[in-house]
Length: 422
Image (cartoon, rainbow, N blue to C red; front, side):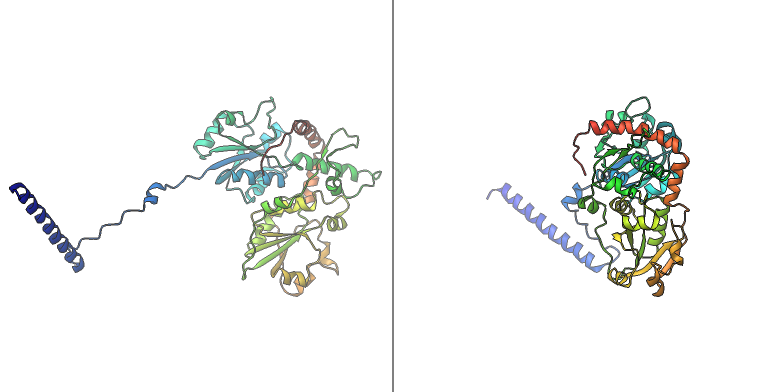
């Protein structure tokens, strides 16, 4: 072995021995736990943690009048929410609606209650403009962190004929959803206008108004000679739609189940507020929705305005509701209370007809006798008749509004093509 190799070997041995001595010293100090103890070195993070970064939620925006809010509006909001992680909804002001479409049936504060109660809505912007201007669009992108603006496949035109969403489309920040067929505010107002005309004339002996819109005769046009051309839409209920609106969860074994029933026709802010109060009294809110025949027999042949399946979807979309009974019985029986394990039965102080409280055949006689019945003070003095009276009081204005809207709806249906969606 030459001198150079000998030196290298001795140096290497010295380094190894020195390292062992130093390591042993550090270990002794660490185990001693004294003031000079050296803390253990942290382990490096897993490789996957270095790659994962928190993803900013995708925020989508959808606006609308949401006048006389119905399951078509709710389904649009459901579809919009599915395109992102958070849904921000712009509720258009009363003045903007009046300027662009005609007078709204429900004022802004009621429409805000309705939109806020939809279970797919995360946030609300009140007094939103009817048209997406460049200024408002930049506000959405920069202040509200909106990624996409959503609208249905039906056209939304301004009074000058231009597209209300043209700027969003040009910016590449626009997404489209499928319109819900069979219902619109125009359609519902048209149903009530027909109801008013029928009630004012004894010459026509028609069946319940609801059956004219859901008897399977397809889409028709009002032929009463009024010239309004009110569309009679045909709603086709499917099991898939009910599943989409459902919560898909039942009560827990120890849940306090609260039950409330009613017609819930023309679902309005008064309904929402009483459901909110009822939900606060328990862990699970079960809502019974009466049949069309039950409502016709108790409230007259022109009721309900909306059929059972339509009313069920309206209620299911409410965030305060956990489950519904589609076609609930008029009487709350002992068997029903046992079957659904109901802890409390409630009813509001504001309703279409409170005469049943004085009848011998009180539908709540059983829960009363069991001591599980409670009347709730209704927060809002609004009923379905309240909404109808608003239409009657401003009959001509709403008739003109419907005539104007009918032209655009007719054009939509004539040029309609298939749009893939939910």
